[in-house]
Length: 167
Image 1 (cartoon, rainbow, N blue to C red):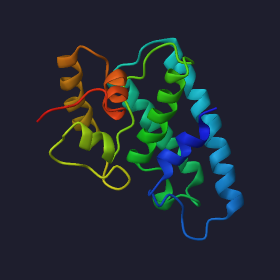
Image 2 (cartoon, helix red, strand yellow):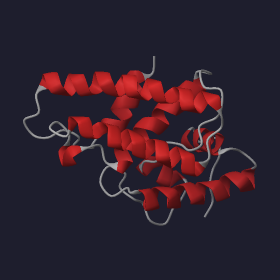
Image 3 (cartoon, rainbow, N blue to C red):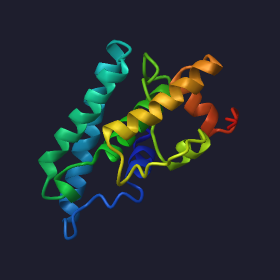
């Protein structure tokens, strides 16, 4: 249902594939990636995950991707692309009311970092690691708590320009 938006949003400007990777192998990767994300949904429908548990899931997706080391630059999905994939997938499910619990985090990219008015913007396709990612989430948690809303709700409102963040 929302697969095209998930893949398009996560793969944009990411330089994901090794030069010379075959179209057949890329398609195999995308098809299996979809199945992998769909299998991860169960974890998010069983209970509301903590921030730490969610980061573990991002790393599991990253580790899973090593099966396509011949196809992916760097031998696997980097952390930034992994978090964007999982978070976009969960956000889509939640928005379509197909996820029992709100996603613990949101897709971190340049746009949301700018709209949250973060001082240092981390390029999510290149330099996003767990530490940088958690700094963005921590800043967003502070803003969300001031507005008495969840992180998922904060991201939707900020992204749709219904909540302005002042410096």
